[in-house]
Image: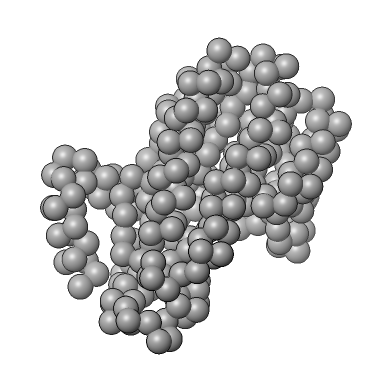
Length: 272
């Protein structure tokens, strides 16, 4: 039986592939994203595009109202919208850092709060949150991104316990490296903090590593992650966490079982 779903961050990458695959499986899928111009063809694939910015309360409220009015219910929320803020802690403004949390945590939390009353009334529901291997490990120059994902992990775990009596399940997905234009996008964002920084030598090494052809080739295809999202959203008994993507399991294993000293030694060898 098809479910009614809302997925954010659906204009590209994992979000887009997941929306399409869920629609093909017979579900009613509303795909939210800021860049509506990039979702024009989704309607032809059975997906309903919704322009929304998760940091804008009015957008979240409008999207949920649209779905409930049209469908009478909302069964699954996939919180996939997010981005990575990278740069030296000393150089990143607190304004930029707050926006990282607005997208990766507070916008997600507001949207979740809006759907929970409907799920409680239905007697069932599922929240799927896109975390990252970065919610369990860390890399240079990613302090605010990693902080937002670590926060999301703890927030989701608490929510899972609170909503369990209402038959609402909370699932985390922890992707590793995904084959996207991440290196090029990251490089563009780093330029904002590069000039005049005391950390240029480290930034040069970090960007060279992250944007190298070998790093891009190791990434996992978005459609592979889409299948993981589908399982997380539809399985009768989903796992609490799904780990998928290049380097995710090895790095998480090293930190967990060998400790921070060994893990940091791996980072130093990797990033110079």
